[in-house]
Length: 99
Image 1 (cartoon, rainbow, N blue to C red):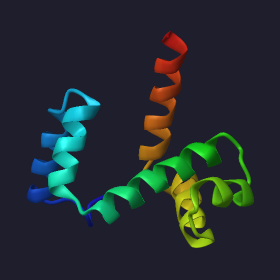
Image 2: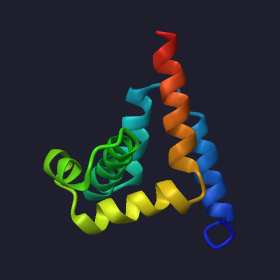
Image 3: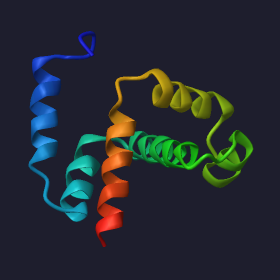
Image 4: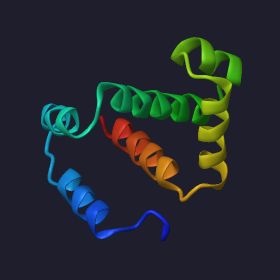
């Protein structure tokens, strides 16, 4: 994490924490990111969810359109990364279980 940490990124992440709805998030990220960047992030998160649900690479590729390189990179992050995907996926499952 140290190699990406900076004052600019800290400020941006604090701003993200202030968002209160999906609509607000769309507004902010549409201003912050290009359409391609946002689509790539959405695709990577979809890949993470499918891998976490034990889908194989072929199923993930077919459903998301992600390349095998992207799927492999996301899988590596799920297994050996900073734990961000895992944290969000676990919290999402807990929230979904509360409904």
